[in-house]
Image 1 (cartoon, rainbow, N blue to C red):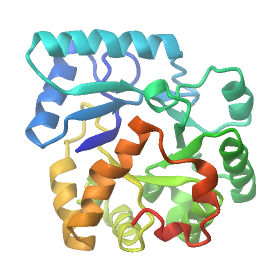
Image 2 (image 1 turned 90 degrees about the vertical axis):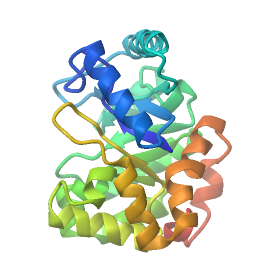
Image 3 (image 1 turned 45 degrees about the vertical axis):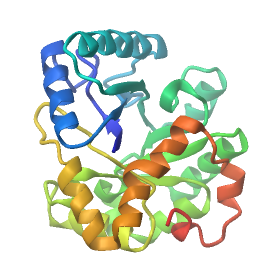
Image 4 (image 1 turned 120 degrees about the vertical axis):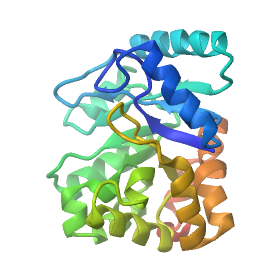
Length: 252
């Protein structure tokens, strides 16, 4: 499996506190069948605003430590970027870390309250620039929980959805679990992330079993491996996705 959302980098946000903590997380990930982890520290959320250089340096340091420990898990750079009014300008200046620093996929976190129209405009602008926005944990967003139809609207405008493994198994409560499972059944999920923090349990293996139960082996493979592999290969163009009017089913 490929974990597309984690806070495994030590001492850079509210995630891992130390190299020892990061090593512990990596060991658990390996034991659950994960071989690649995107390190996505918080950015632009009003508390943390980690620079690209800091992320790359932290990924390099953790990779060296894991190799020393004999743990063969790939750590790739990324960021969980809170959507804000400066996002497009910051992207144009090259200041925002895309997934794998490849400039093709960007992980975005929605505010708790937002104007859907404004977010859709931002999504379309990013797509025109050749980058696919991936929305982190939409199943936990208060507005989406109250108005589930927002998800289909975001997807139609070019975004992809990433749900949290813990949501699927109920760690974030019944409402988030119901929303995550409905998104899976409706074919709206592109990828799965652990969103691991020191105070959370690693749930990728349990979530994969739930994916299989909800939508079958093929869909589980797509969400946990094949779709995330497109991030590594950068072989999925936003214009090709956006033109599909049945976008909510495109990733199945």
